[in-house]
Length: 225
Image 1 (cartoon, rainbow, N blue to C red):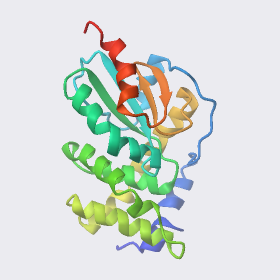
Image 2 (tube, one colour; image 1 turned 180 degrees about the horizontal axis):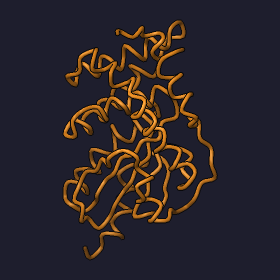
Image 3 (spheres, one colour; image 1 turned 45 degrees about the horizontal axis):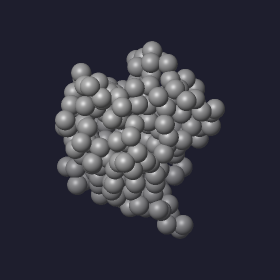
Image 4 (tube, one colour; image 1 turned 90 degrees about the vertical axis):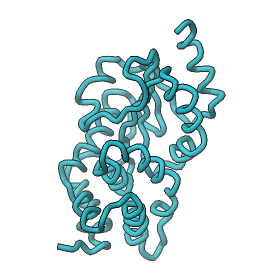
């Protein structure tokens, strides 16, 4: 059955589905300066299969919590992350793990689209979603749900999804629930209350910092490695 796009993201669609899960879309918890490594790497911290780049034996592990509708996250991924990947991830110095922390139903939908693609297309899709964030976030006042629907659908089609596959993905209740569980765990157990938030070998840092900041954080951890 074809889903009406207004029902899909506005009233009886994804937003209602998420509300029915009893999980928070807006999270506000006290921030912590570091996270217990056991909690950070526990299975409950990542209800869905972990999405990682870089060597599993890298001396530094960076875990990012982000929202697909966060402008600071988009800034980090379009300006700083390419250089971070080139200097540290691709060279085996850093293992990078990306985790979901959606603040709204559109962010949940965007994460779901990335999760519905094959593993080798996950990070490319994340990059495209951040690059084209305004196409589905800055919705028109007259019909915000239709703008979000059309923007995400256009990106999904670019990735090779049909509309039927797109709609099937975004009505997967189990997937939506697990995306939300990632955020709920990070909020209650790890003190995450903003995006982007990073854990650098367990140390919590927040903000879309430039590559020079990352150099200062990583070089001492890599000295002698």
